[in-house]
Length: 278
Image (cartoon, rainbow, N blue to C red; front, side, top):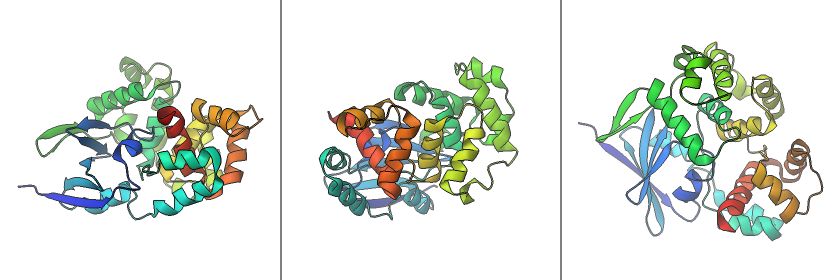
């Protein structure tokens, strides 16, 4: 008989809602006052009490989910660094201080953000769920069924026409090409690259532009010196920070120089505050 393992952490710098609904992951559903979360082959349930957050997982998977939710990192220091910047960023950090940057599987994030292009968060979630149901393995989490994220090898068995049949449109060709490349082992050394070298390598992949590459860097490799610029952070840059640049790649470079190793954290505070808090 399977048993559960529970993790508990203070809730000041961990909001399940902010962490899961800020656009870095799409494999979760709201569940009886909390969230049911799928990560790779595993699943857990996350809920927040008055002052703490509780993570329920299968026995032996506590270490995995402690790393997944980045529980060992002191986010108080990160928020304090944002507050020292003052102005809009200070307000955004206070609003979004419960966001944690997840440690997610790199291959899963490459596929996920290829599908994210010109898309909205609910539809991205639907597409990922459809992909998992089609090619993932059915698993059970204490009576609740879910599907694992397909391996690159499994994805590579299907062609672009199959992915078009799932409703992925022009993204189907990108996914099929990426799956073949990942299945060949081409990404084996990615984690050892510098951020800039890894970005250059990702940009070679079909369908990967600067914003998608930066999302993969931040959410798939925890490269927090990357600052993805989308419609929301472009607006923040121009309307809240008074920036004059119009080219999004140049905006990203400017903000990465300004914020350094905190770029990814600050980007999430700004994105979430602009989308949810204003």
